[in-house]
Length: 94
Length: 144
Ligand SMILES: [Zn+2]
Image (cartoon, rainbow over all chains, first blue to last red; front, side, top):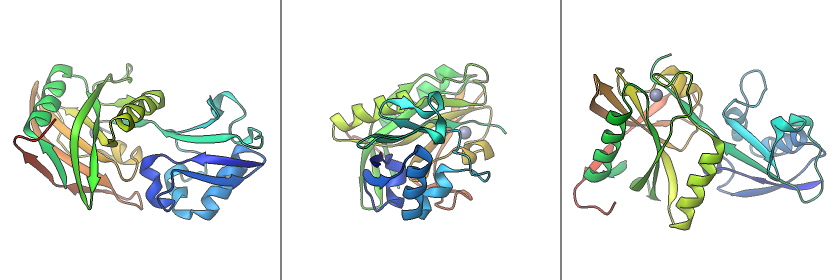
């Protein structure tokens, strides 16, 4: 399936400054794999050491959060749009 | 270099003082040219960490999208985010680093016993290993 991935501003420097990138994949996981194979520096910002998406990385297919679908196994259709959206988190003491 | 007018500085400090002893947070809207950034406006946000608001802050992705859209409509970018450290120094915590995005400016204001104190700005390094300090240039009479 040919899909479009929307890249948030803070990650564009790692993807040749593009806002949207066309990739192929049957599932969200495959599409994100294709993306991070092409732009390897994105990987550490999206995935933690265990290979899981970081908690503050939100991924939507069209308008739906993949946590409410089948996460990385969410199937894709031709023309779907995957959007990566930041949560912003922090705090003063550990 | 982060250019921040006196007026915007005061608004961030006031937000931090009002929110004490909880953390405040908000967005920095502006433009980037060369290696300098100029903040032109703020969006004050509600801290969504109801469970631990004294030492944590959270901005939901829906709010990030809303703020980005508002910035774009005015020809501005979301350059970064500010938050306060109630009774803690104006430097990023380990928790800040673990949850940070690259590229954004992270502005931190320390609030001691309700009084806003030091302010600092930080950028996560591309390898996520640490924050580098970003100089804040305070200017009088800038639009904001
Ligand atoms: Zn912090």
